[in-house]
Every structure is written in C-alpha cells, then in structure tokens.
Length: 428
Image (cartoon, one colour):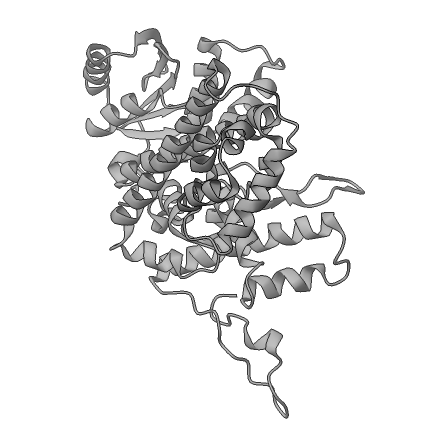
C-alpha cells in the first residue's frame, strides 16, 4: 500500500514526544494558542487523545520522533482514526534543537516544541506503518532470525574461546562454520579426550562414524582425532564431572538454537516462496532466502520511492561530503538510513563478487584494478557494488522483472571479450 500525502494545509498542529510510559503532547490551534499535557501510553489515554483531536479544527497533522517501538501503537491508533501522521528525523531534531536553543540541553517539553517547529516548516517524513503496509510479519520473522543468529554466534564464541581450550583444545581445528552440526554432535558424545581413549581405535571409528554424517574420508579423519586425543593438552577432567556436564548443556543449547534457525529459514521460504518480489530478488547474484527476507521486510512497498536515489538514501548508501570555501572533504556514505538494508546489500555484494561471472564482480574488479592488494580500495569497491546491488534490486522490484546477468555486447570486428560478455547490460 502506498502512503498518501495530505496536501491540504492543516488547521491544527500536533507534536508528540514519545517515551516508554508517558508521551509529551503539544497542540497548536488555528488561533495560535498552545496546549501542553502529558499522556500515558495506555488504551484509554489513546482514546482520550483521539477524542480531543477530533474536536479540534480539521485537517489535523500529527508529528512524532520514532523512538524504538514505543511509537508504533499510538501511531496505529491515530492512523486508524483517520489522522495525518508524519515523523521527524532524530538527527534532524537534534541539530534543529541545538540551532534553535544554542544548547545541547534537552527535555520532553523542549523536544515537543522542536517537533512542532519542524512540523510547521515541513521538515518531516512520511510515516510508513509496517502493519498497514502488510510487511509486519516479514519484519518480525527477520528480526527474530537476527536475534537467533546473534545467540548462535555468542554460543559458538563461548565454545571456541572457553570450553574447547579447557577440555579439548585440538578439536578447534575442525570448526568449519556455524552450520557444522556434526561438530556439536561429536562433542556431545566425546566432550573430553578421555571419552575417546576409553575405546580402541576400531571401536571409536565404528561409534563416531555416524556422527560425521556424509563426510568423505571418515576413517582417516577419525584416526587423526584419536591420535590427537592421545596427546591432548586438555585438563584431566573426568567425563562425568559437573564441569563437563555444563559443557554438554551449552552444546545442547547450541544445537537447539541451530535447529531454531533452520526452522525460521524454512518459515521464511514458505512465507515468501510464491511472491513475485521474492523471485525477483533471488534472481540477483548473492541474494538468497534470508537476504531477500530482510530487504522485503525493511523496504516494504518499493513503489513508495519515486526514484532509486530516494531508495539509496533510505538505505544510507547515498554519498555525502563536507565542503566549505576551498576545503573539500572526501565523499563518504552518509549511513543515515536503514542499517539492516545496508547490511543486506553489503552481504549480497560480498557473495556476488566471489562468484565466477556477473556484472557485480566485473564492477568490483574494474574498481580495484589500479591497486588490487589495497585493503581500503577493496572496501570502497565493495561499497560501490553494494550500492549497485541496491539500485538493481530497486529496478527489478519496480518493473517486476528478473535479473538478466549474461547479456553479450556486440564488438565490431572481433570477438566479445569474456569480461564484457558477462556484463548485465539491462541492469548495470
């Protein structure tokens, strides 16, 4: 759903400074009178505010500064009542307050005054409600997956940096990725070298082989583990001690979180599998289920952006620089946008440049050609590729087309070079 902009000049201005339990409200009526009061974040107070605003001259425009998720319920209630709701930028409000009062001092009444002044001058942004736009489920699934992934990373770090150095240091070399389920299953069965050495080599290979799944060369790997256990530097802690039991509990927790992450991935695939937006995004090199989920959850309806530059700015991938007189600063990313969208396009770019042939890798290689071993140059190249990824994603979703990654260029009088043949002519 595309947000509609009310072009009628408001008769009543309302500024709300959002807090966790109480909100500061400042109302200016057509005759210039100001009314201030504090309201609780409760259903009855929301109803009282709606009744008060309904009795004032219309149209009424309401502005607030987004604060965590504390503004969501009130904004939903006001929009359902038919009011025009907009937001002000947190950074813009801070800069305006310093310029207006010549001080960084802040409080709720002063913040409400700043919001009111910015509202009257039109320094506002359209409020995009995820629930009304139909992307609330996607956002919650995306954020839950993010929290589960963070928990998985914390558990993996505790495993590698605390438990393994104490009880089985030599096993750390077999940690390949955060999806090594066999590694967790093996340690649950053999948490210390003593649990391996109680068995003969043959018995150990027969017992541990099923834990390694479908890996090739199991016997050689298991014999290597047996030799490492024979000369391990681990602490001589008995297998059935309380310390090893806590180690196993952490391993069980790690396996549970990994299973939950897989379940969320399957839920995302089920939820998005039949949507054309998902198919468009997954046609991009480097974009799979989770990155497509993040992009769709955070961007919402892409049609609300009139130009790809607006979308880049929303992602924080637009360029900005400081210039005064003869002094000109370097152009840098503004990073004044949605951090999760920026993360998604950065990760997609990171994967795309490692693929064999696509226009994103071509752009990356052309960017670093002058200094291929310069780490700063490579970082800037990845940034440029991430911005291109965002532009292409915007174009695909806006036109409802799939990515065309292999469109050959015609070169007069000769063959088409491979590096140019793989450029995506339609989407570059």
